[in-house]
Amino acid sequence: METRTVILIGPEGAGKSTIGKLLAKALSKELFSLDRHRNELYAPYNYNQAEAEQIYKEQGEWAFYLHWTAFEFKAVSHILQNALNAHDTFYGKILDFGAGHSVYEKPEQLAAIEEYLRPYPDVFLILPCKDTEEAIRVREARRGHKLGLNKHFLEHESNRRLAKHIIYTKNKTPTESLEELLQVLLTKSTSG
Image 1 (cartoon, one colour):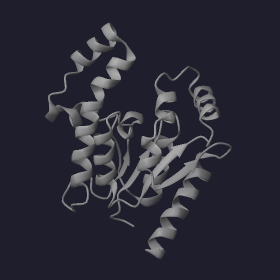
Image 2: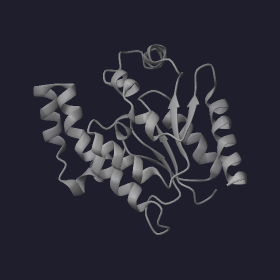
Image 3: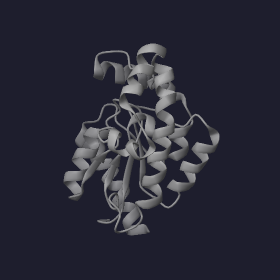
Image 4: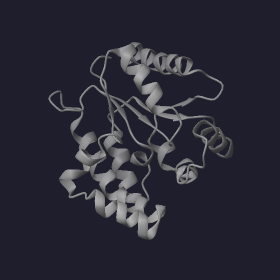
Protein backbone atom coordinates (compact mmCIF):
# COMPACT_ATOMS: atom_id res chain seq x y z
CA MET A 1 0.00 0.00 0.00
CA GLU A 2 3.01 2.31 0.45
CA THR A 3 3.23 3.15 -3.25
CA ARG A 4 -0.46 3.41 -4.05
CA THR A 5 -1.76 6.88 -4.81
CA VAL A 6 -4.96 7.65 -2.92
CA ILE A 7 -7.26 10.29 -4.42
CA LEU A 8 -9.91 12.14 -2.42
CA ILE A 9 -12.67 13.90 -4.36
CA GLY A 10 -15.89 15.65 -3.44
CA PRO A 11 -17.48 19.03 -2.80
CA GLU A 12 -16.18 21.78 -0.53
CA GLY A 13 -16.68 21.12 3.15
CA ALA A 14 -17.20 17.37 2.77
CA GLY A 15 -14.14 16.46 4.85
CA LYS A 16 -11.48 15.70 2.20
CA SER A 17 -8.77 17.78 3.84
CA THR A 18 -9.49 16.58 7.37
CA ILE A 19 -9.61 12.93 6.35
CA GLY A 20 -6.59 13.46 4.10
CA LYS A 21 -4.50 14.76 7.01
CA LEU A 22 -5.49 11.82 9.19
CA LEU A 23 -4.85 9.38 6.35
CA ALA A 24 -1.43 10.88 5.65
CA LYS A 25 -0.47 10.40 9.27
CA ALA A 26 -1.89 6.86 9.44
CA LEU A 27 -0.08 5.75 6.26
CA SER A 28 3.04 7.91 6.67
CA LYS A 29 2.36 9.44 3.25
CA GLU A 30 2.49 12.98 1.99
CA LEU A 31 -0.80 14.81 1.49
CA PHE A 32 -0.92 17.09 -1.55
CA SER A 33 -3.82 19.54 -1.86
CA LEU A 34 -4.46 20.65 -5.43
CA ASP A 35 -6.28 23.76 -4.20
CA ARG A 36 -3.34 24.88 -2.07
CA HIS A 37 -0.99 24.50 -5.04
CA ARG A 38 -3.36 25.87 -7.68
CA ASN A 39 -1.09 28.67 -8.91
CA GLU A 40 1.95 26.43 -9.41
CA LEU A 41 -0.14 23.63 -11.01
CA TYR A 42 -1.77 26.05 -13.45
CA ALA A 43 1.35 28.09 -14.25
CA PRO A 44 2.51 25.84 -17.14
CA TYR A 45 -0.82 26.59 -18.83
CA ASN A 46 -0.45 30.41 -18.61
CA TYR A 47 -2.78 30.85 -15.66
CA ASN A 48 -3.05 34.46 -14.56
CA GLN A 49 -4.51 34.95 -11.08
CA ALA A 50 -5.18 38.65 -11.67
CA GLU A 51 -7.19 37.78 -14.79
CA ALA A 52 -9.18 35.17 -12.85
CA GLU A 53 -9.94 37.68 -10.09
CA GLN A 54 -11.05 40.22 -12.68
CA ILE A 55 -13.42 37.69 -14.25
CA TYR A 56 -14.90 36.99 -10.82
CA LYS A 57 -15.31 40.68 -10.07
CA GLU A 58 -16.84 41.61 -13.44
CA GLN A 59 -18.74 38.47 -14.46
CA GLY A 60 -19.42 36.58 -11.23
CA GLU A 61 -18.87 33.17 -9.73
CA TRP A 62 -20.12 31.03 -12.65
CA ALA A 63 -17.87 32.74 -15.23
CA PHE A 64 -14.97 32.49 -12.78
CA TYR A 65 -15.64 28.76 -12.33
CA LEU A 66 -15.80 28.18 -16.10
CA HIS A 67 -12.50 30.04 -16.48
CA TRP A 68 -10.90 27.75 -13.90
CA THR A 69 -12.22 24.53 -15.44
CA ALA A 70 -9.77 24.62 -18.37
CA PHE A 71 -6.83 24.88 -15.97
CA GLU A 72 -8.25 22.25 -13.63
CA PHE A 73 -8.65 19.82 -16.50
CA LYS A 74 -5.09 20.38 -17.76
CA ALA A 75 -3.52 20.10 -14.30
CA VAL A 76 -5.48 16.97 -13.32
CA SER A 77 -4.79 15.34 -16.70
CA HIS A 78 -1.07 15.93 -16.25
CA ILE A 79 -1.06 14.59 -12.70
CA LEU A 80 -3.02 11.43 -13.54
CA GLN A 81 -0.98 10.65 -16.62
CA ASN A 82 2.26 10.87 -14.63
CA ALA A 83 1.53 9.83 -11.03
CA LEU A 84 1.88 6.11 -11.81
CA ASN A 85 5.57 6.68 -12.60
CA ALA A 86 7.74 5.98 -9.53
CA HIS A 87 9.88 9.02 -10.35
CA ASP A 88 6.94 11.45 -10.56
CA THR A 89 6.27 14.11 -7.93
CA PHE A 90 2.76 12.76 -7.26
CA TYR A 91 3.62 9.05 -7.11
CA GLY A 92 2.30 7.31 -4.01
CA LYS A 93 0.84 10.44 -2.42
CA ILE A 94 -2.57 11.23 -1.05
CA LEU A 95 -4.09 13.71 -3.50
CA ASP A 96 -6.77 16.00 -2.11
CA PHE A 97 -8.58 17.26 -5.20
CA GLY A 98 -10.30 20.58 -4.62
CA ALA A 99 -14.05 20.62 -5.14
CA GLY A 100 -13.78 21.72 -8.79
CA HIS A 101 -10.95 19.37 -9.74
CA SER A 102 -13.37 16.46 -10.10
CA VAL A 103 -16.28 18.19 -11.87
CA TYR A 104 -16.17 18.61 -15.64
CA GLU A 105 -18.75 20.48 -17.70
CA LYS A 106 -17.52 19.19 -21.06
CA PRO A 107 -18.41 15.52 -21.64
CA GLU A 108 -15.13 14.89 -23.48
CA GLN A 109 -13.15 16.19 -20.50
CA LEU A 110 -15.10 14.01 -18.06
CA ALA A 111 -14.53 10.98 -20.29
CA ALA A 112 -10.80 11.73 -20.50
CA ILE A 113 -10.43 12.07 -16.72
CA GLU A 114 -12.46 8.90 -16.25
CA GLU A 115 -10.02 7.09 -18.53
CA TYR A 116 -6.96 8.59 -16.79
CA LEU A 117 -8.36 7.39 -13.45
CA ARG A 118 -8.93 3.84 -14.67
CA PRO A 119 -5.60 2.48 -13.30
CA TYR A 120 -6.13 4.13 -9.89
CA PRO A 121 -8.12 1.81 -7.58
CA ASP A 122 -8.23 4.21 -4.64
CA VAL A 123 -10.46 7.12 -5.67
CA PHE A 124 -12.69 8.05 -2.74
CA LEU A 125 -15.67 10.38 -2.98
CA ILE A 126 -16.18 12.03 0.41
CA LEU A 127 -19.76 13.17 1.04
CA PRO A 128 -21.74 14.07 4.15
CA CYS A 129 -24.60 11.77 3.07
CA LYS A 130 -26.40 10.27 0.09
CA ASP A 131 -29.21 12.87 -0.14
CA THR A 132 -28.08 15.95 -2.09
CA GLU A 133 -30.28 18.51 -0.30
CA GLU A 134 -29.33 17.16 3.10
CA ALA A 135 -25.66 17.11 2.11
CA ILE A 136 -25.91 20.81 1.20
CA ARG A 137 -27.49 21.62 4.58
CA VAL A 138 -24.81 19.63 6.45
CA ARG A 139 -21.94 21.36 4.61
CA GLU A 140 -23.45 24.82 5.01
CA ALA A 141 -23.91 24.18 8.73
CA ARG A 142 -20.26 23.10 9.01
CA ARG A 143 -19.08 26.23 7.19
CA GLY A 144 -21.62 28.68 8.58
CA HIS A 145 -22.53 30.13 5.18
CA LYS A 146 -23.99 29.29 1.77
CA LEU A 147 -21.46 27.44 -0.36
CA GLY A 148 -22.32 28.72 -3.83
CA LEU A 149 -21.27 26.22 -6.47
CA ASN A 150 -21.42 23.24 -4.15
CA LYS A 151 -25.02 22.41 -5.01
CA HIS A 152 -23.90 22.16 -8.63
CA PHE A 153 -20.89 20.03 -7.63
CA LEU A 154 -23.15 17.68 -5.67
CA GLU A 155 -25.74 17.33 -8.40
CA HIS A 156 -23.24 16.95 -11.23
CA GLU A 157 -22.55 13.41 -12.42
CA SER A 158 -18.76 13.77 -12.41
CA ASN A 159 -17.92 12.83 -8.82
CA ARG A 160 -20.04 9.69 -8.81
CA ARG A 161 -18.68 8.60 -12.19
CA LEU A 162 -15.07 9.12 -11.14
CA ALA A 163 -15.27 7.57 -7.65
CA LYS A 164 -14.38 3.96 -6.99
CA HIS A 165 -15.59 4.20 -3.36
CA ILE A 166 -17.86 6.54 -1.40
CA ILE A 167 -17.37 7.49 2.24
CA TYR A 168 -20.32 9.20 3.97
CA THR A 169 -19.25 11.34 6.93
CA LYS A 170 -22.58 12.31 8.52
CA ASN A 171 -22.83 11.29 12.18
CA LYS A 172 -19.22 10.06 12.13
CA THR A 173 -16.13 11.58 13.61
CA PRO A 174 -13.24 12.21 11.22
CA THR A 175 -11.48 9.25 12.87
CA GLU A 176 -14.46 6.96 12.19
CA SER A 177 -14.51 8.10 8.53
CA LEU A 178 -10.77 7.44 8.34
CA GLU A 179 -11.22 3.95 9.78
CA GLU A 180 -13.85 3.17 7.13
CA LEU A 181 -11.53 4.39 4.37
CA LEU A 182 -8.58 2.41 5.80
CA GLN A 183 -10.75 -0.71 5.92
CA VAL A 184 -11.47 -0.33 2.19
CA LEU A 185 -7.75 0.14 1.47
CA LEU A 186 -6.80 -2.86 3.62
CA THR A 187 -9.48 -5.06 2.03
CA LYS A 188 -8.34 -4.08 -1.47
CA SER A 189 -4.64 -4.65 -0.65
CA THR A 190 -5.30 -8.15 0.74
CA SER A 191 -7.75 -9.15 -2.00
CA GLY A 192 -5.96 -7.56 -4.95
